[in-house]
Length: 347
Image (cartoon, rainbow, N blue to C red):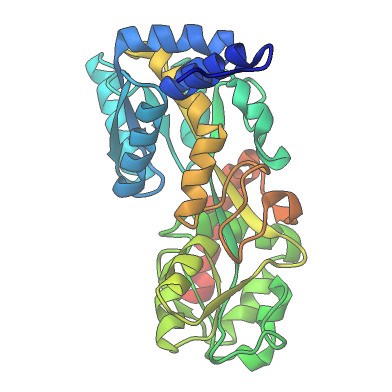
């Protein structure tokens, strides 16, 4: 059978076939060079303090499908455990992790201050939502996940009209015995939220909440359990967890506070002296690119880019008013806040 093409079509068809045959070939010339260097290394190790092991493995698989010949060994723990493991590696004189991701920016500030990070600014960072760009002005670490605290409620018990719309609404007497939240003494995300609330409303905000007999757990996600059971009706909580729970049939809904949802960016960085620096650079490009944000959205997490739609019910970051305390304020205020918290709430 003879195929007929108009002038120029064979070149277009060839380009399309090549792009489909090798995803990496569709990249820029700079990315191609980086990919070729990464292929020679063949792998990378990722110490991750974000997501869960299943999603981390999904991210690694998608990366290897995009860049055949470069595998990802993802090790998921809590951020503190990952950081301690990293410090042990460094003390032993062997950098086993190529990429380190933490929910605690102070880990990165420490490593950068000790000259232990390799500077690399991913080209894809330009595509991140504006609020997430240039987390580190020096370019050593970059956002790869964002924790959010918004207002979550049990919609079988609270109507959309009556549900709290902003943080001060939680101090209304009608929520007595109906509020739940985590503790800054156990949850990093709640710790940052507490700093933001004190900055905006003063400690009097928490004194008012305490008078309403809140049910206090540990994690930012603990209130989701008591909302599902109906033991409590409203809570500061993580939208991603609420959306996943709602997908399973639980009666949860989310309001993004009008004065700002709390966002806590989680950064990734490359370790200086790692065994696979080029693969690590390519992985940072992936973490700031659209494919990774699509994986986040598919798992009800917040995508990092405005060109990737958020999960059903969630707001894009570009449309969200946000509160995001500076690292210096968190490091300065949080230890004192933990003491105040114990004095006010007793735990």
